[in-house]
Every structure is written in C-alpha cells, then in structure tokens.
Length: 368
Image 1 (cartoon, rainbow, N blue to C red):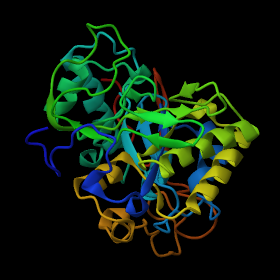
Image 2: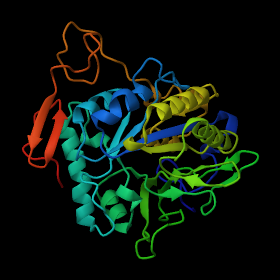
Image 3: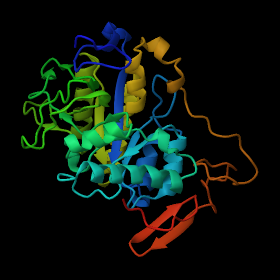
Image 4: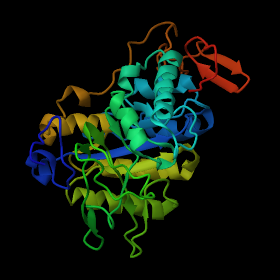
C-alpha cells in the first residue's frame, strides 16, 4: 500500500515484518480454543497443557499462553480466573453461538458486547477493555460483523481461513518450506480467498483493524489435505502433522502457526501428543507460544528474538505470594493446599441453565 506503515497499518503479505532475517524472527505458535470453557474439558485435559510444572517453557521461559474464544452460555466463569491469571487471552466467540450468517450489525454488536459485559461481571480478574479479539461462530464472517467490530473498537478478528492452495500462502511439501500470510490490517478490506457466497463476502475496508488469519495445517504425506480446526488424527499421525507444519513455517518465513481447537477434540492421548509436540518445538531457538494480542503487539514494532524477549508484553505472569488463607478468588492456589479458589466459587441457577463464578450471580443468565 502507498501509505501503509506500522504500527497502524500492515499490508497483507508473506514478507517477514520489519524485514528481519528469518534467523532473528520469533516463531509464534497460537493454540486457541473456541466455545464454552467447562469442567469436563478442563480437568485432566486442557489444564494439563498450561497449569502443571511440566508445561513446556518457550523462549520467554513462560508456560504456554493460549487464547480462549468464549461463548457466555455454558461457560464456567470460575475457570476463566485460572486461564486469565496465567497470561492467556480471553476473547469473543459471541454470547450464544447462534448461527450469525444473517445477523444485522446491531445483532452482532449485541452478541459481542454482552459477551464482554458478562465476562467482566462474572470474573474478578478480566476487564472488558482487555477483551479485544473475536472469532465468528462457524467462522461465518460478513461485512455486518466487521462493521460491528470496527465501530465498537475491537482490535482484531480471527475468523478467516488462509489456505496454501487458494490464498497468497504456499508450501513446498517435500522440502517443508512454507511462505505463510502474516496478520494484516484491513485498510484494503479482506485479503484472503472468501469461502462464502458472493453476497456474504466482505467488500468494505476497515483501516487499522487487524485480521489474524487461521492458516491451515497441511498433511505433508502427499495428499495436501488441510485442516483449519480439530485435525482428525491421533498418535504418531497427529505428532507428524504438528511437526511438519512447524518445520514448514520455521524453515520458511516464520509466519505464525496455529493449532485451532474445540474442547470436544481433547482426549488424554491428544493432550499427550500436543504436549510432546510443544516440548519438541520449544527446543528450537526463538519459539514462543503466543496469543494474537501478543503477536499484533510485536508486529506493530517488530524486534529480533533477543529484544522481543525483553518486551513487557512477553513477561511471565507471576503468581501471588503464598498466604495462610485462600481469601481472594484469583485463579491461583494462594495457600498452597493444592486447591484453587476453594470455598470462593458461587453456583448460580437460572431457568435457562447454571453457571459457576467467583463474582456475585447476575440477575439473568447470559443472553444478548
């Protein structure tokens, strides 16, 4: 673009931001979850990716930072305290997860604004002004969605799929070298192949609003099969998929890698493979398990790996100093007895459902 300069504008490109040499460019890996966060996907599954001391430490020395695109319905808000306290990003996936294909701008605004409001009301730690990102249910985006987010001051969307065979990204499957699209601002509108009917595909520009594309993971075993969410593999096949896709980015232009999941995908064996992959990836120089917020922060002022690790937005969250009692609900085991926030969580019942929260029960069950 003629007048497109960081930090406010970045054209869609496979070029490394800041013209950094590849060896000096961090390799970001985004691990994201869509939909509600609930007890049965957390305990013994998702928590094993980021809570235990065994969690992989990346170049920052921190446990992985992940991103949770939440629906308010069916979410256990007391668990969000734990996620957020550990430096994870909390973002919007709407309040209800209704099919948004025909949403008006106003309906979009109600859905995402109420998700923000309820998350602030029902947690002690998450402020609405830190909920800046969004992913559309069923990835059904439109101009109405972008208009709503843009006018309401959101920072980014991450609903758009970027494939290696239809977009600007490309992969040499044999040599495991890829050129993947980096996040960009929508000053010239959507810069990806739109997979929807013409009338649904966005036509407008949204200057300064970021798109963080969901770059696919490609099966290198000759089929070129690509999955943007929930790879339908397990065991060694899953491990191979993860490692091949890491290598084609790490050896290529270091475009961010994404592992985009739903809670329903998680099993003990897939958690084991994911943890094993993350430990393996973390042994490579400059690998950071990052959130889109962190990646955008870096892209606004790209720095070599060594300088990146010094930046305030890359520092590890610190647990509070141990105390004799579990007196505050903060997502940590404050008194060292092995339980988190015990005795501080409220169960709230409504005609439409129940929820758990460290805050006071709201008058109504979350709805737009």
